[in-house]
Amino acid sequence: MLAPVAAMAIFVAVFGLATARKAHLGVLMLPAACATGVWLAGMPLREVVGGFPVNILVLLVGVTYFFGIAQVNGTVDRVIAAVLARTGTSQPALPVVFFGLAAVASAMGSPQAGLVLAPIGMPVARRAGIDATLMAIAINSGISAGAFAPTSLFGIVTYRVARQAGIALDPFTLLGVASAANVALLAAALALFRRPPGAATTRPAGAVRPEVDARRGPERAPPLLPLLPGQIATMACLAGLVVSIIVCALLGVEPDIGVTALAFGAVLTVIDPTLGARAFARIDWSSALVVGGIVTFVAVLQRLGSVDLLGQAALAIGSPMLSAVLVCMIAALVSAFASTTGVLAALVPLAVPLAASGHVAGWALIAALGVCATVVDASPFSNTGATLIASAAEDERPRLRSLLLRWGMAMVVVGPVVLVPVLVLFSRW
Image (cartoon, rainbow, N blue to C red; front, side, top):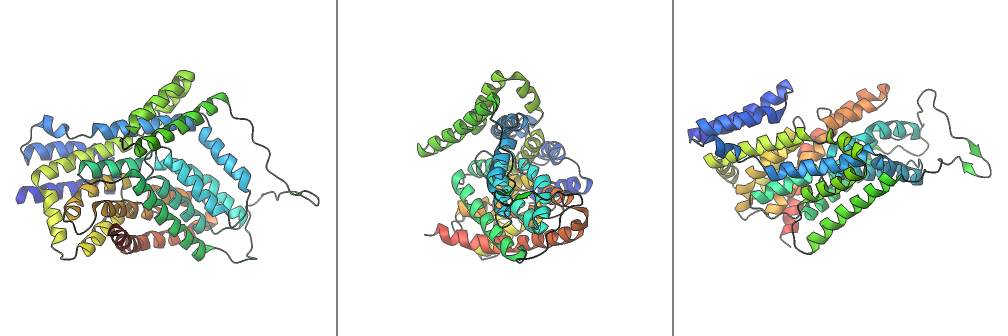
């Protein structure tokens, strides 16, 4: 009993140390996993290191490399510009547009890609008279929705770790749950923070009002330039990646998304070798090491029986539903202050005993846990929340920081309390 508890204490301590010192979680977690496995579990070092998830590493590298090329050659920017050119600056539509843009960008490999919308969306909101809090929540919700696509980091980590733990979780079901939950949050934000008709529109100093022609109306945005050959090739490869995933899913075959993305990236690299070199720097090695270190440590915890011990403790509460809500609350609270990727990699396996009890459907619990861990990312203590606040005008930041803190902490409770019962009920139909 002492060894499993001590190992779990080390695991929590490493998480706390990395957060307090702002150190890289993966760099701390991997050697800690090796030391714990050798000294407490009596495992050979080769066996401990063998728990490193090479398949997840290939996924993250392949996907972030391919979409890194799409960002480097301007394809992602062109998609965003094309959407904005067709929607204009209609005040009611802009938060919805940026939600969609953030979702698309986030689905392209890494949720961090959605952050490119922050420096664009926050000034646009100010110019159009949209509440900065509404735009911030719209962008964060879009990032959270797109991040659970089968081609993006959170989706990859969640369904892969769930499957390794023996839980059948369809990646498109995960995406559907995340999308529905975040659309609901966007609707709530629209109701709470939409400015009343006739509210004053604040424009930044020096902003130029669009010229108006009595016959033609407001000046339209200049037409988009034609796509470059490399961007056309990237769009074709992106379509090929999406189609291959959908076809494999329809045929009941699990595609290796990482290898497929690498293959399309290789094609683009051959077309323009300079892109490959520039995109290599965009590979998300940091997240790969975080996930690898945590999954390796969790494998040691499973060997020692620590995971089963926690699962039994959760089941001892007596109510499976309450246990599931508490697990999701823990995930949300920790994620508001720490690495969301790390939380997903760590807590998905810890929820396995509860899912194995049969009282709560495994896919419902894991999907709820994943979504609850991301909807709190608007918190000022997360990378997303901090970026959104920094992108707002200086005079808007104090209010925005206060409201995003309240929103993030409210999601710690609201997310699990609403989502878990809904998914559990849905799973019983």
